[in-house]
Image 1: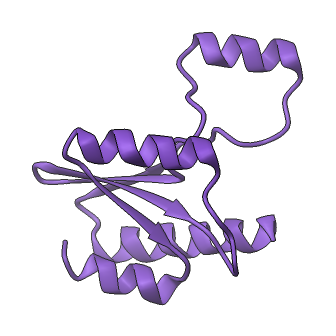
Image 2 (image 1 turned 45 degrees about the horizontal axis):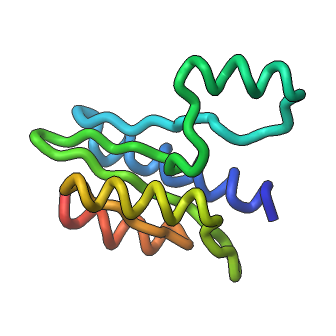
Length: 108
């Protein structure tokens, strides 16, 4: 399932960079397996559990996008991050397909 999510993310980034070359999209690579020492070091550097997979920067607007495939659900840390982002007035979207993202991008 993880590879499917990776493929979705790659497709979205490719589409976005082609369709909106003047805007920014980037990933926050929080995931992966790390030993406890490396995890502690990264946490001290500001790594935050639950951060969305993608961040999109548009003129005067920042959007956070979490990707899931199939019946994937958000983890508690992801829900908490979403709540914090939305409380601060930013947009957060849970996306399950490239088509769904393309529909969202019509709002850009």
